[in-house]
Image 1 (cartoon, helix red, strand yellow):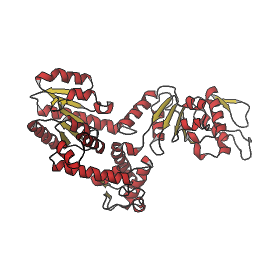
Image 2: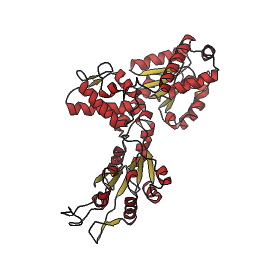
Image 3: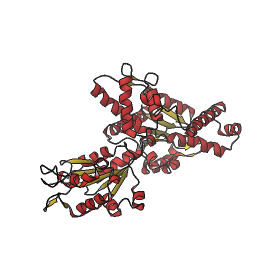
Image 4: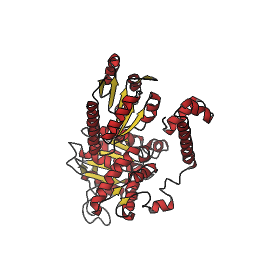
Length: 433
């Protein structure tokens, strides 16, 4: 369900809009002040409908100071005749539309619905994720796909570096029709690396009963994906660099050079700058491979991708297991609360186990207990102390705010802290009044 952030201080207009959007099945967060909206906006709703003049400021001026991600949302401003100029400035800064009061509520609902439908289509077409960070990464990859440049993908294990590499390959008009050769550098014994990378002739060494094409030769006109790049030993780094510079190499046991031209995409979960400083990774090879750098953040830093990825994985499991699978909102909230140190790979494993152990294919927190839950490796109930304390602090401040009817001043007095400190805590804890 897509959410709407409604910013409107007029009780009658606000109530009317909230009820109308909810009739259409939308979840509405209604804020009456910009201070409240600032907190609510951090959760990146599907669209924003805002009055221009509010008790604590001009919304269009506030809009221009927001982050790129926040301004990229569909924004719709409601304005009186005297503030049309301000709304036009907001349109120039990136807002979607403005309506002058009195406005046609059905027209506004239609505009918002179309914007949300467009977002749903974009979500369906996304390959890496729907979070701002992954959308930027995907846009960068698609942009450089037509260029003959090397790309370095960085991020923790399981974040989707190979998926990103395949997207780059498939989006490339020059390389997409040729082979995508994936190499896990950590899985090749050092004694076999040269033979596997460059190939060998028959009789080149004991056991070489026939000629063999190496990774570089197989990738000709296509893409060579080097996963776990930081695991390459120093000697192999030097040989790879030479082959990339000269676009040719020798098979083991051959006196003739073999030419091969390909795009190279490398991936690592290591800090290669630290590796270079320690003398374990060559600077010249790094700068040869890292013409374009794309970082893929961990799943725990992009909760919106957990929902998106879970829905995709569940759809795959429905096909694989040939049975319907339903998932409760409580189960999804539980997934979002987890840390996922193994990222998407761990999430898929957890979902597979949950489906197998579920009753009648229904995934719910009360009916699914996996081995990970049993040993505490994935349970959100076993959290670090600072997380537990933060949760208690959030719950207590929320109770005080409700007791004081949302008054920040009264709540600050009850809590024995300043208004400024309370606002800072509310922002950190994602609380609104």
